[in-house]
Amino acid sequence: MTSQQQMNTGVFPTWCPGCGDFSILAALKNALIKLDRPIEQYAIAYGIGCHGHMANFLNAYNFEGLHGRPLPVAEGIKLANRDLNVIAVSGDGDAYGEGIAHFMHVMRRNIDITYIVHNNMVYGLTTGQASPTSPKGFRSKSTPEGVIEHPVNPVALAITQGATFVARGFAGDPAHLAELIIKGIEHRGFTFIDVLQPCVTFNKANTYQWYRERVYKLDEKGHNASDRMEALKKAFEPDKLPIGIFYQEEAKTYEEQTPTQTPLVKEPLETDIKELMESFK
Ligand code: SF4
Ligand code: MG
Image 1 (cartoon, rainbow, N blue to C red):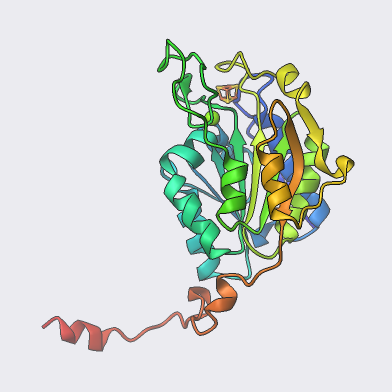
Image 2 (image 1 turned 90 degrees about the horizontal axis):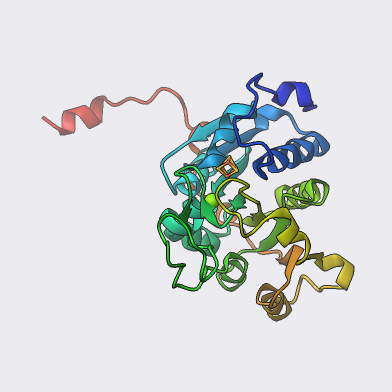
């Protein structure tokens, strides 16, 4: 029901040649084609960053919001119309810097949305400052002597904060990433997918080659995704970057626990505001 043609906007992506964003876009499109749901059933919220340009290249109901704020927008959309498939997209700066508070609280709620983060360990759009996931020692325009702080570990954070689907993908393996996105959208509850994405222009340390030397697939190593402690160990595995589903559990969603609230979309369009206006007199 959703074709490649339907999703094309006719605008050719302006990302730098070789950027990992291209394959994340391709993986998302392939996932939506395979899921075979009408494209108008998707709403996608973006933050600010190179990832946000995707709103111009993917023909869906898109909302490009403020820096770090795609999650509250996505949550609002989901609560207003629970029949929609809602996706939020961020970059690492957007998600784990400006938007970190939203990230923490959405995981406590288990609201049924899918969150995809383009994690290139740098602020790309603003031309190369250290981000919350930049490794210790990373030299950038904002850290000429190298980053002093430890990087945020988004996967470990999600496992410990109650996310019910926690995964990591790699932009260098778009077929595997598309499968993760399909499983994530099919999951009932909050889905988090951190995507390792080379920024070929402003991160010369974490290249495709650098990732390929560290990435391996969890499901090929017999990982048990229902074991939270095993998932956490994998999230802290030194010198390796496992990809796949770290942790998944079934739990009640936020929406299921608020059954008395009528979604806005089901409220009558005409409301008599006369009484309300009278109250201001
Ligand atoms: Fe991609 Fe980096 Fe270029 Fe942004 S600056 S489009 S993240 S390569
Ligand atoms: Mg970034």
